[in-house]
Every structure is written in C-alpha cells, then in structure tokens.
Image (cartoon, rainbow, N blue to C red):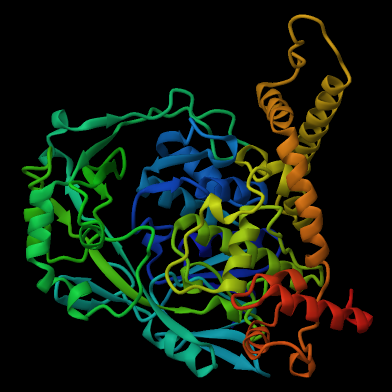
Amino acid sequence: MQKYNVIVVGAGHAGCEAALASARMGLKTLLFSINLDNIAQMSCNPAIGGLAKGHLVREIDALGGEMGKVIDKTGIQFRLLNTKKGQAVQAPRAQADKKKYQSLMRNILEKEPHLDLKQALIEEIIIFDKKACGVITHTGMRYTADYIILTTGTFLNGLIHVGLVSFKGGRSGEFAAEGLSLSLKKLGIEIGRLKTGTSPRILAKSINFSLLEKQPGDKNPVPFSFSTKKIIQDQICCYITYTNQDTHQIIRENFDRTPLYCGKITGIGPRYCPSIEIKIERFSDKESHQLFLEPEGIETEEFYINGFATSIPEDVQIKALRTIKGLEKAEIIRPGYAVEYDFCYPTQLNATLESKIVPNLFMAGQINGTSGYEEAAAQGLIAGINVGLKIKGDKPLIIDRSEGYIGVLVDDLITKGVKEPYRLFTSRAEYRLLLRYHNADQRLSEYGYKCGLVSRETIEKVRYKKCAIKDEVNRLSKTRYKGRINPVNPDLCEEIIKEVELEIKYAGYIQRQIREINKFKKMENKNIPSDFPYDSIKGLSIEAREKLKEIRPGSVGQASRLEGITPADISILLIYLKDKSECFT
C-alpha cells in the first residue's frame, strides 16, 4: 500500500484548500470524500464572500489558494457590499452557480499532479508511537501518511431534523461519520455539539417574480482573485421579499412540532444567523423579516430562500412560505432542515492548527466550531501550508492579528474557543483599517511565495505595486501646488491610484494603527515555553493559573486575550519572564 505525506479527510471547502496547498508544495497527498460528486458542495446559501468573508477570500487568494479564482469563473452575480461606508468594512460577495463551482473545483483537484482522490467514509485514526499516522475506511482499508488533516464539516455524528423527524446524516442525502467521532474521543480529544441549519429550496416557476423587489449585480463587478482581470460572464438578478404576521403566526402555532422547542436538538446554533423560528421568538416585536431569493445556478430552476433557515415540519414550511408576497404558490423541492454535529474544541490546537493532544493531526473548518465556507477554506489553507512547512523543516506560517483576517480567525479559535458556531466579522479585527480587501496581496503574497504557492511573476507584480504606491505617496507628500491640487500620476493604473488615495485620505488613522501594532507585536514577540510552570508563579489567581495551563498560550500577547486573564495577571507573568530571560526567543 502506498504511503502518503498527507491525508486530508473531507472534501468541502477546507479540505479542497488543504489538499491543494500540500500537493502544490510537492507533497504526495490523498483527499478523501464520502461522495466525490459533492466535492466543494455549498450545503447552505449558494454564495461566496460577504462582510469579512470577502476579505478572507482575498487573503486566501493572496496566499495562493483557489477559492477566489473558482468563484470568479463560476459566479452569476457580483456585488460590493457597504459601498456607502468606509473602505475598511467594504467587501465583495458573489452568488455562485453551485454546480459549476463544484465541477470546476473537482477538475482542478483531479488535475493536480501530487494529489489523489478517493471516495470512502473514514472510521478511525491510526496511531503509532503516540502520533497520527493513517486512517481506516468503513470497508477496512488502511492508508498511512506522515500527517492527517481532518476537515469533516458537519459530518461527525451528524443528525438531521425536519420537524420531529430525525435521521443520521452529515447533510441531507449523505452518511454521517459516527466511527471517526468515537475514534477522536478515545484519543482524548474533547468534543462538543453544535447545530446549524439550511433553508428550503423552491421551484422558480412557482414564484411570482413580478411582486418581488429586484436586486441586480454591480455593473463593474469586483473580482475576488488578484489574477482575474475582469468578470466577463453575464449576471442575473436576486430578489427580495418579506415575511409578515401571518407567516409568524403559522410558525408560532407549530412550535410544539419544532425540534428546537421540544428538546430534540441539544446542539448550540449560530447566534448571528438564527433560524426563522428563533427570529420570530427573539424579535417578537418585528412585523417582518427580510428574505433573499437566490438562484442556485444558470441551468437550474432551484432558488434558495436566504433568511428562512428552519427545522419546522415540511408541511408547516409550505404553509408559512405561501403567506409571503410572491411565494403564494411556492413549491418546495428540498425542505429546510437543521443538522447537529460533533466538533472539537479549538483551544486544543496550536496556532498551526495542529492538535496539542495528538501530534501530526491537524484540524480545519467546521470541526473547529466555525461556520461559513470562507472560514473553512482559510483554515484548510493554513493547515495544508503548515503541514508542508513542517515536513520540510521550515518555520510555520502563523499570521498574526495585525496581518490578516485569517490571523484574527485562527487566534480567536485557539485562544478564546467557541461556545456557538463561530462567524468572522470585521468588528473582530482590531486593525481593520489596515486589513482592507484591496491590499490583501500586499499583506500576504510574500508568505505565499515563500511557501511555493505564489509564482515569481505574481510576486513581482505585487512588489511593483507596493513600491509604486509608496513612491507616489512620497512624491505627493513633498509636492506643493497653488490652486487646484495636482492629481495622482496618470501613468499609474487605476488599482494603484485608488490605493494611493486611500493611503493619503486615512494617513492619520493608519499611522495610529501602526503605532498600536508596534505595541501589540512587543507582546506577541514575548514567547512562553509550552512547559512553562504556571503553578510556581505566586500572585496568579487560581482562575488565571487554570486557564493558562489549559490553553498553554505561545506568547504573552495570546495570554492577554484569554478569557479570565486580567492586566494584573499579565504584569505578574511579565515580571516572572523578565527574571527568567532564557525563556525569550
């Protein structure tokens, strides 16, 4: 049996990026999927990007990932969000032709020279010498590798709910991974339970579009990938409608048939993307809730109802939808449902996304308690890169909070953990003015180049861009004009001109954030050994001591962000580290 360098379990958005990254770094990689026809499946809304998520996709692209390139080729509507607000919170979003997206991503995976694909359900992690070294499939086949990356999504012990009917599955129509969850528990990994849900899909010919509000795409779409010169495909409309008091009343009358209110669902759901029944209960004073009707592709009549995620019974879904303007004759072709699944508490991971408990085992995506395709893809890319760097004996890639939203995402997970499905927001980033979606290539492409995922041609373009922006800002700062202000050098491209204008416009704020980052890095650079003797430090509170021993932060900066750690605790820790100067690296 052939031995691999890397085995990736799960071919969702995290698994695709992880497998491509490790394979492109020259490692013999094997990617497992329960169903190869559902690679890169969009189980929920058929869209990529959005607030903070669009930033993530740009950063994935800057590091050499694939998501941005694929959505640029398969998107059917592109919109730049928050255009009336500041640059720091603007972000691109695109509706996807979900089947074309899947098909293209699978084709890219299949053509990758160092990557193999296999269809199988993984039941167990093989351990040798206390390290992960392989997997066992449901048919008893054994595959060995130097490293394992788990990207299992919602499949670990997945349980689907439609009303009071429940059945096992990672998503509708697919098996759950029960054995693997048990295997992880036996290895000493702490597991929790979360819940997410999806909306019903309805048939286009049953929708009265004349009663709906049109939501067109942008005339000049902003691509996700820095390598995409222009979006050339035609765009199609999405539509907006609203629930009403009749809708709400029907759902309220059936709370007793809803698993969320009958105790059947024990997993914690997402606070920021609640189901329609939660919205109706939590915001009982609201007369309506906005819904977005989103096409799932060019060659399908299927529409996704964004904003109507639900686990109410199917007959109630039909009855409730038909009270909504434009949906009076709606035909459901796939009911909405909730899915409960196991996840592994991410505080058990290092910043590389390697398990602290089982060496050579990495985890990425919803297995770490996150929600969203973009959050998953970003983690998959980081895990794949760090496996490759570890095999080569190189320094790991750890993006800090001042460098990218990916750094914010990973740090939040491993430091703060999750109590509900984690979703990234721009508000989670302390330095978001510097983390604009426009400049992701300037921030991160050098890392991608050093890892071998970004080409020489691409990095030279990025270096030219950075220099051109700096030179033009310097030129303008030293030039004085009477009357009308001299415009930016017209020989520069529009992209560079826009960045120059932003740098000048926000100069004061940017300089202030740079000063804050310099303070932040002083704390981040004060490393703490993994075996640091917290019990021997007098003055630390019991809560602080227990939290520090549990998480084992890698730096004073990370320690300062732990829940329950006070400034006084950090001061004591700094004094102790100063006395033990050999702890510094």
